[in-house]
Image 1: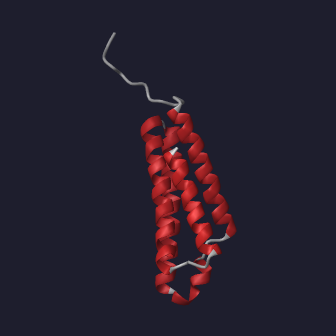
Image 2 (image 1 turned 90 degrees about the vertical axis):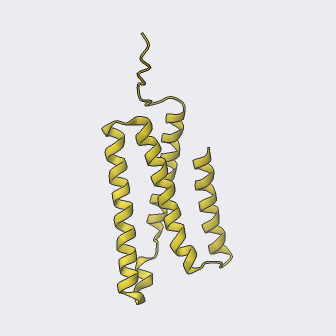
Image 3 (image 1 turned 90 degrees about the horizontal axis):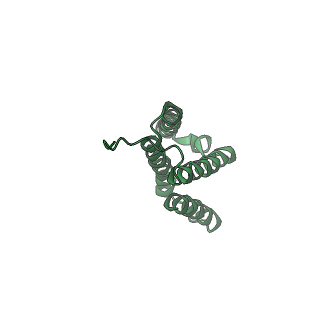
Amino acid sequence: GIFGAAAATDWLDGYLARRWGQQSSLGALLDPLADKLLVAGALLILVEHGGTAAVTLPAVAILGRELGVSTLREWTQAHRPGSSNSVAVAWHGKAKAALQLIALQAMLAGAALGGGAKDKDTGSA
């Protein structure tokens, strides 16, 4: 539930900032960072809970892609200051983020309901 609320308020914050013209360069820097921390936190919980290669390998791939895109975006802004439009988030990036957050919410809900839990060795017979 906490993850879903965080994702919904992140979307609402961006929507209201664009609608009311309250965008800032600090917000443009911090919002993608907050998104990545939200996704990384959820992935780490799923890896800890699931612990199988079927969970860990996609999590590593997703985190690697997120870090790669962020690095490329920052490098472009630092080395080509006039090209800020070329690193702006496009609609398909927003769609990817929305689908990713929905999928993570479903996976977290499944894990919370007992799906894919690690076998715990309690040491009792």
